Length: 622
Ligand SMILES: Cc1cc2nc3c(=O)[nH]c(=O)nc-3n(C[C@H](O)[C@H](O)[C@H](O)COP(=O)(O)OP(=O)(O)OC[C@H]3O[C@@H](n4cnc5c(N)ncnc54)[C@H](O)[C@@H]3O)c2cc1C
Image (cartoon, rainbow, N blue to C red; front, side, top):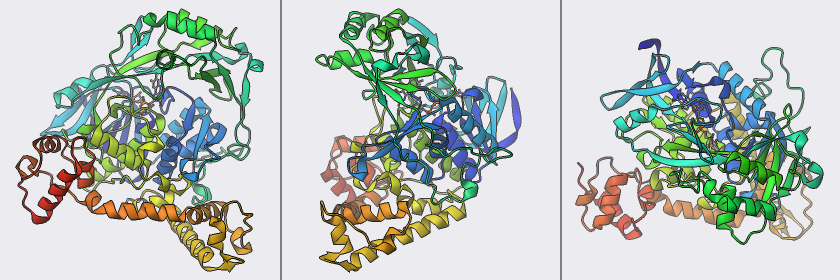
């Protein structure tokens, strides 16, 4: 084994959605970074559906953008259909979703990494980690090359000891047509990191010219697309920097030439085919032991769990502008190929459809995330960070959000700085990481608005404003953009005050805005402000009562949320604490009282006892 001459600050293993954001965040905050991937042609590959965003997930993408990440802009630039979901509902639950040109998305991400200063890309599969005195110091690869760094971020997705299933057919590998990571799991086990199994699946891909779209319902994109990126706070030079590199110019505006998706349904014949062949499915024959995603069920699961439902909705989604390949959303399965073929042909409009790639399920190792600190650093091995599907999550957006935080923190650790930790009331990324490290997960974790108790504060367009203090403290965006965000906030606060103070017939402008079902003519001077500012001001005024109530509650809880627990506190010695709670706290070792309060089995009276013990300093340490 030969050691590479360069010593890095951060090595990122894996170049999926988590790895990309981790590497960019580390490099952009000044760390000398290396990203290793078993196959650099699949950087940023969408393993499943070619879309970014959706309810709660879309809000994560906007948070990633606010924190200096790349997913939002790449999704916008390569987007082929844009929709704002829940557009008729309240702003807290609205979320953008964009159908992307899958290959264009990958190429742009690869090119973005290539152009990033401080970042080196190298194609190699990581086979094991190198430890020294309880710390990780590097990794070994299949090319007999060893790399050294101060910190490592693991973002290996579904690839660890992965097995793909189509009926009884089994193949090793994390994704069809990609490489295989067979040995890395052993390093984690050697370091005392526990691994468990999960599974996920993907539907077949079809050839567009063999689909009869006339039998389907057309689903068009929004006429006015809602983009993910915050372009009002970016300078021209920060817009689409990849496309403007060299001679390349962006020839079109994102969202101006959208394509359609198509809706169809399963038939009674589809139901018969699936139910009569259940025992041939890898998932139902006992061949797969891992737990699958509850909220993204396979077609087998749908017929078993919702027995009375006669038909299920399916969406035909184009995979790009320069391909005739279609993704069939809603038809994930691990049935044998011949059964998949019959199933496809039983669906309206797909009678003659040709399968380009079969559906399959994949089973893989994940590392239960309760083994991590809220910084995403391992509790077992110093300087080792985990992000993405390896932490038991599912979805590109969840992976990107974790990747960004892990990348920032790995870079900060390399410099000896304190980590970036987002709180639950600051955004979906904070909720997700707290859920993962505190409660863990037994099935692929996906974000929902219902997971966030303070979701009223999380409207997607406010991400930059909510996270401003972190953006500034951690230097996450260029200074010019930071100034623009600050200026935007100032203007919003100015107009909010102005509209509450100044009156019109029947009260203040604020009262008029809050009055339901009235024609709202706004003052001319306010009409002139920019759309993003106007939207946020109107939202803050219209929902003033609710938002204030939410903020008061956060303040009330802040004593518990913000109280740090000493690292080596001995819970078993705290008088009055139930034995069961003390054992759980010993095991979980929460960082704050807030985190302790969310551990299952630890109840409010335990938190009260802990608080008193901390205040009176009656606790003992190990
Ligand atoms: C078949 C399938 C179906 C899926 N279905 C869904 C779904 O229905 N809904 C959903 O939300 N999500 C689904 N997903 C998951 C989704 O793809 C992931 O959540 C997301 O891609 C996770 O991002 P990640 O960065 O953690 O990992 P990935 O995107 O998987 O990226 C992992 C990266 O690590 C690299 N890598 C792995 N091991 C090594 C190694 N040892 N050395 C070097 N590089 C390595 C890989 O090459 C890749 O670049 C599915 C995934 C698969 C494979």
